[in-house]
Length: 84
Image (cartoon, rainbow, N blue to C red; front, side, top):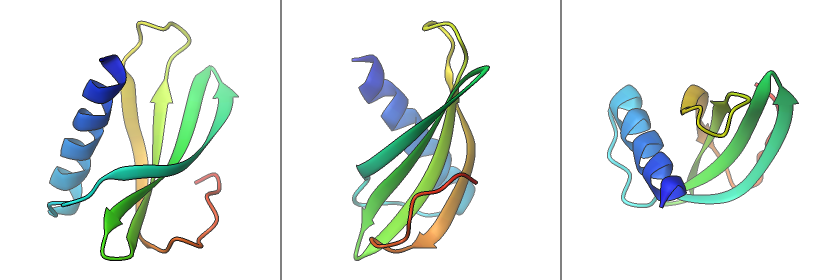
């Protein structure tokens, strides 16, 4: 499944960038924005009441790979998912 592979890739990239290993990595909310492609903003539950916000980008073509553009750590369940 393409989405599973993307999800696994994003999790690995984030673990590398944050130097953390997440026992849980579950998307709980997302928003999207159309640009020259599409930005996805995703709130991810990583366990123990901790959340991440991540921004993924996918180009115009369905074949374009997803890219991890940015992320924010130390978020809570109630933090609003906004553009960053």
